[in-house]
Image 1 (cartoon, rainbow, N blue to C red):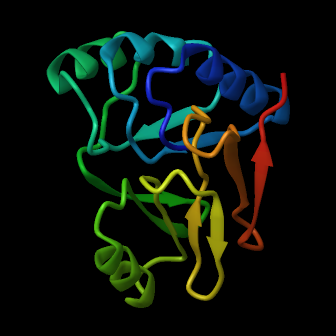
Image 2 (tube, rainbow, N blue to C red; image 1 turned 180 degrees about the vertical axis):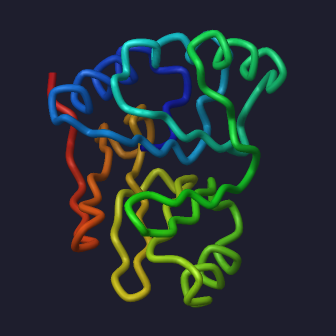
Length: 159
C-alpha cells in the first residue's frame, strides 16, 4: 500500500481488506502524511513495514504514534526479507533510482509509491500499489504479492 494522505476512512477500508484477506505482512511505501493517521493501523492483524514518503509532516510525532501500536518506521528506504524473498521498500520519488534498484539483481521485488498510479512492471518486478487515498486517480488501490511465485495483482478497495 502507499499514499494514504490522511484519508482516514480509506485507511480503515484497507486495514479491513487486509484482515479479511488474511494478509500476514503489509508494506506501506510512504505518504501517511500526519501523525493522527498512525493509530488507524492499530486494528491491522498483519505486521506493518513503513517507510517515509516525501509529504510526511511531523516525523517525530508520527514515530511516537506508531510506537504506541508497536510499529517502527524504517526510514526512507528498507530492505525487507520475507519467506526467503528480498524486497526493497521506498517511496520512490527518483525514478532512476527505483529502476536502478530493480535492475541491480539484488531484490526479488521493489515496492514503491509516489506516483499514485497503480502498476506492475515485470522482470525486474516493480510494484506500485497506487494510492489508498484515491485523491488523484479516483481509485483506492493496494497490491497483493504472492511471495511463493512472485505474482502480483492490483486490488481496488470496495466499500
